[in-house]
Image 1 (cartoon, one colour):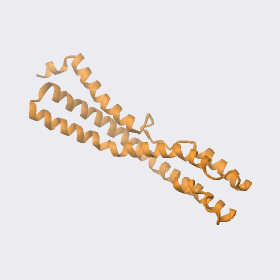
Image 2 (image 1 turned 90 degrees about the vertical axis):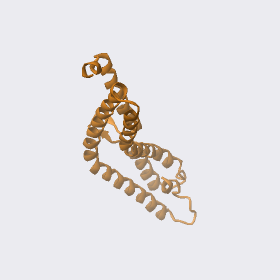
Image 3 (image 1 turned 135 degrees about the vertical axis):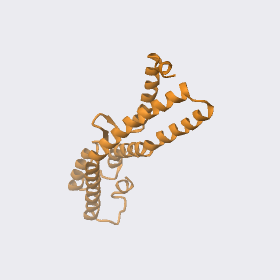
Image 4 (image 1 turned 60 degrees about the vertical axis):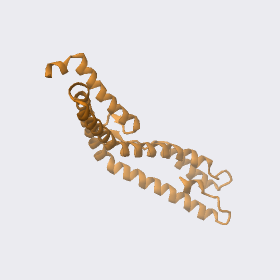
Length: 175
């Protein structure tokens, strides 16, 4: 993003050099997209399974905390819940950063110094700007985007399990 922001800022560089810098930015962006496309199928399935398992484990652990445990078992279980939530946090946070950076890139390109550039440079820049407007998003299991919101949704799923246990009086049946 910083490299794009600095395009055509050095008055000592020729238009050919500036154009080559732009082409290098386009190539770097294409390489990032190819890398994302290569890892997307693997990440999609893995994170979906991990979200499903984490939601279930969190729900069952919280059921244990609310209905069956004493104070010290509850403290240990809550520490376990925190560590479970922290498993997906770094990846979800990274996906959020990637989404935000991809969205800011189009604005950064538009705000770069392109108005008085040669027509070939402007045409390439417009083409580049058009392509970067498509966000880089990873989808878990082809169902929902991987982001901090999805990490929060997994925690909400755990509380849904608690609600189901309460509504059906399942805790009383197991005591």
